[in-house]
Image: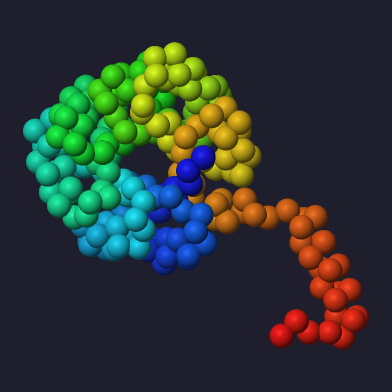
Length: 217
């Protein structure tokens, strides 16, 4: 499974990139707004930090507007992925951009039928929002499993990019049902390494080592 980080905080991205565990970055208008910085400037800096795919979302909702904005976004860096809404105009833009050789991420997916359409439009990634489905008492993980089955049935190459992840358990469950990518908030990604028994074991090892009075260096 690939790990993307879902943020526009370049300091957080640098920190995670240094671990060697990061495969890409996703952003959206809300995350860019939190940064308080110029949109293109943020995307350009992120693309310099990581060689992985960086999703940059269009703001237009009509086909012509999306295509004009996409033409500007792909100029920023070679690893920019155009993020498009799951609407008919968004799917039309996805098909056109894919035909031009650009990577696309179709976002705001909440049903298997929507994911099927995105795959037929040639999307590089489909982003089902599992946390938001859980919020309204629907099973976000069931959606991931349904998409996995459909894509495998027809050998679609579109990658399932699980989004709106809230907890480490979400990450584990996505891996179990076969999501290709998980895009994760920085705090949740860092929490994956945590376990109380790991902390307790390390504390014991260090205490025992101190008793020996030895040093490695």
